[in-house]
Amino acid sequence: MQQRQELVYFDRYAGKLKTESIYGEKPLRWAYGTIIGRFCLETTIKQRWFSRLYGRWADCTCSSREILPFIEQFEIDTKDFLETPESYQTFNEFFYRRLKPEARPVYQDDGTACFPADGRQLVIPNLERATHIYAKNQQFDLITLLGDKSLAEKFAGGSAVISRLCPTDYHRFHFPLSGMPGAACLINGPLYSVNPIALSHTFSYLWQNKRRITQVKESPAGDYLILEIGATNVGSIVDSGSATLVTNGDEKGFFKFGGSMVITMFQAGRFTPAADLAEHSASGVELYARFGDFMGKIS
Figure 1 (spheres, rainbow, N blue to C red):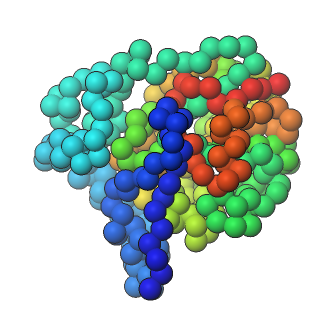
Figure 2: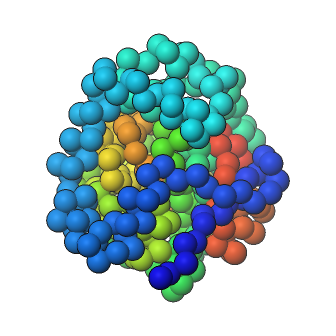
């Protein structure tokens, strides 16, 4: 029997390694690590209708009874919530909750970018090179991921920051830099998990899953991309901003229930990651950092 491997990340604020508490860990390991589980994954779990059913439950008032046990089990700090836990009518309302503005101050300094979301963060310095992130010798298929050959050529040799949101995280995402966002391009697909347990089998789930791609023009770093990746039980990616000109930290949208991911992609030579982000990513270890904090320098 294969030995169970814990997911370890480095917490920027605590200054130490921590072990991730995984929501639905047993079913996740079963689905991606057993023959029967993978059969169910391919025939049922990855299908969009499966996530829609789960989403309907999360939008029912009966789901609200799960909020307080969830907060207690995962030791979620409620002091930053804009509303009280008891005020949410459904689990989804709690899941895409807003925070007090002072809870996530946006790092403001010329020549820098902030993280677009709370989560476990990794940087890929060169999208054309194989990486050992999640598993050895995996590489982005940019053309398939972006669904556009000319866009893939534009960002070839560039870098990307992967922000992986756990179910326990704040699930709104924001612009890391100012600029002029275009319309989001939706590419439909299945809904595999984006947990490292799943991605260790194949990186390609990222360019198979449902995803939205937004190109932001005229930023201090030139044009950059924001990708929102759907995942199991995340059938809905919702726009909450409509501005034609945005600044660092402006809200872009939110995910409904489940784990999910945001990818920020820069052209070659335009982004230098924060030292701790670069250091831990080079070791294949995710860095826990929050939306608004310093992500790196741009040029």
